[in-house]
Image (tube, rainbow over all chains, first blue to last red; front, top):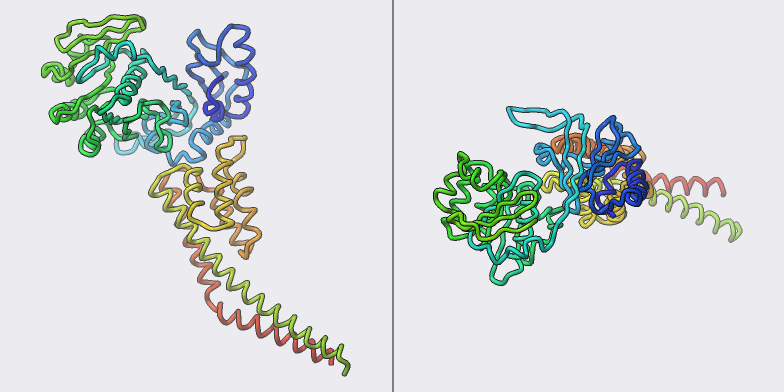
Amino acid sequence: MIDRQVLSVLPLKVREVVERELGSTAKENNLSAEIVEEIRLRAGRQVLLVTGKGEIYLHVTVDEMMIREALEYISGYSLYAYEEQLREGFITIRGGHRVGIAGKVVMEQGRVKTIKNISSVNIRISHQIIGCSDKIMEYLKGNILIVSPPRMGKTTLLRDILRNLGNMENQNIAIADERSEIAACYNGIPQNDIGERCDVLDCCPKDIGMMILLRTMSPTYIAVDELVTAQDVDSVLKIVGAGTFVAATIHGESVGEVRERKGICELFERKIFDTYIELSKTSISIFNSNMEKIYEGIV
Amino acid sequence: MSYIKILLIFLVIAIGAVTGISKGNRLKKQYKELLYLKKTAILIRGEIRYNCGAAGEVFFNVSKRVKEPYKGAFMSLSDELENHKGEEFSEIWNRNVIQPLLKMELNIQDIERFKELGENIGYLDIQMQLNYLDFYIEKLNERIDEVKTGLDGNVKLCRTLGIMGGLLAAIFII
């Protein structure tokens, strides 16, 4: 079944239909509720379930009141408490599931103030795959960079690598989890298994978070998802300079493409990373710091 | 004069006195309960301002710092906010928080004002929550001042009127 936490944020009418339809659809199409990846609510449209095997439209049309009801449940009747996350366009709910939101953006002094007239809600169901990094742990050493296009599982892989590292003796893993994607903290408690020796700084900008963790938590590894800005790169350089390892992910088609990217290339020129992991839809490759392939496998 | 009549006179005087004293004590209690309501509102404000938490978390935390009936009311509010049964916040607030307060010495306007607070929690941003709570606390201060002014006089008046009423009734009996 879908996590109770996911069902509980759906509007009452939608919840009933999802529970009913999912049962019958699962039987008819041999689909399991466990493979539902997204539930999309769009005002004026039917509810859409996105599964690993395709899309399923449910016979219930979403209206504005339903979107409002869903938002009340998602935010615990307190959208005010999610001001910062709303600016980013998402809210993390209990269970680590992420709810993407779209509507009319209100700008103030050149930055997003909030999103109003919300008309679309996309509940992305978190699927932690425990053990997905077990096979490759022996190939990983030092600073690690995971490269892949979106939705190929780089955050899932990073999380599992951290879980493995965090269960090793004499390791202190610190996670700068800006978008609550790695540990999926809810009220400060990690909802995902990230190992015994992990400390999480949740919802803090990555570059600032990395420096705070470096100064305060004596980490052996600092992990961060999606290196993007020059500030992120600068923080990585400082961390490595201080003798702490970094485990990070970055969007990209391949390691070769990323190393040419402006702002990121410095990390390659200075040979900061000891291990590169390249993920695609079907394969996983691991390279050492000299860009020699040391492992290739099927995802 | 028969013993029964004497007994009746004493009884009437005693009832008058007890009624007056009880009314005076209720005024004192009402004042104390208004002060406690203010303390509760300040705690709610602090939780929202400092922790920026959602309503369930805010009231759960506040419940640990207040006495009954607020404690139980906020605990059950916090629990019910997790149920997601298609109700508005104000409905859950009224059922879990306002109903238990009806048993207290607060007058109906004070309870109505607290009910309105529940109807506005969750609306817009943090600043809005804080502004509304400031507004509520300001109104509560005015009410506390109103009750406090002449509290001692009113308490004395109630007691005196009670005793005097009893004496008057006794004279009629005689």
